[in-house]
Image (cartoon, rainbow, N blue to C red; front, side, top):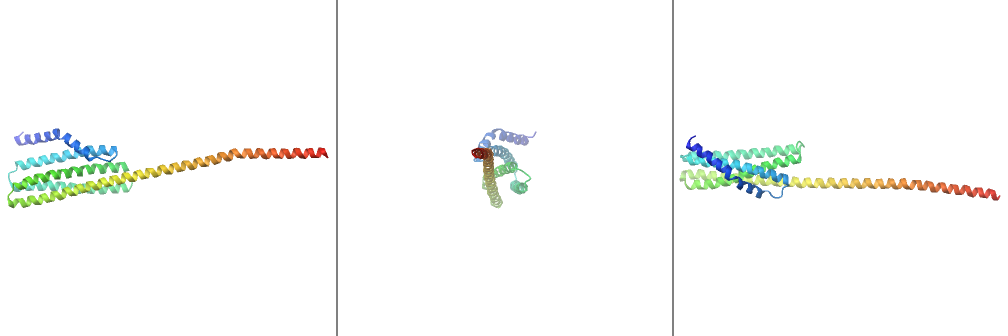
Amino acid sequence: MSHSKWLSAALILILLGAGLFTYRVAAQEEVDDLPLGLQITETLHTIIEEHKQAIKSTILEFKLMHEELIENKTEIIKGFIEERLNRTLQIKEAIRDLNALYAAGNITREEYLARLTELRSELKALAKSAEKLGKLLQEFSSQMKDIVKEKVEKLREINREFGRSVAEEARKIKERIRNELREGEETNSTSTTTVQSQNNDSRGIGRSRHSFATTAPQTEGAGEQQRGNERENRGRGHEAT
């Protein structure tokens, strides 16, 4: 294995080994008011996606470090940003497809929310990667000649806009998750109230039937006793005559 390949592999191993705790803490800090199941989903996927982006960023830095031509460096950075822009468009398309599936009733609320949470985790990782790339471009720009600096500044602006876009999309997803959870709670509350009302109505009908069943024999018994008394009185009248 050549020296450059060995160095690249070593950098990736260091990143995987030493960075795990940092990304775990950051992911946990981002999770706030979601249900436990979604918290676990978001935390795990945030760790995974941030690792992926961190590895790609490290590879980018490695390529830039070993590329001597300035023009080639700008092309490498441009390709890196375009790759992320394309992935963001794919995520937005996946969200539209997911919304359509849920609206058609082809997936459950739990499946819908879990998948939204996964996509949000990837967008958050992309936004974080954009921040790191912005710092790298700033350092890169200060070392460039004026003729190349303009291209780098343009890349920086594209990257800033990309970071804002993915952060906003992640925020929208979180709002959608919150609204869906709120609607689910309201639906469950309404269903519970309806069931309780039906149970109360059933108990009321049962009590009415029981009352009628108890009263009816008593009424019939009283009528029979009255008829017996009338016959007895008529018999006494005949004897007196």
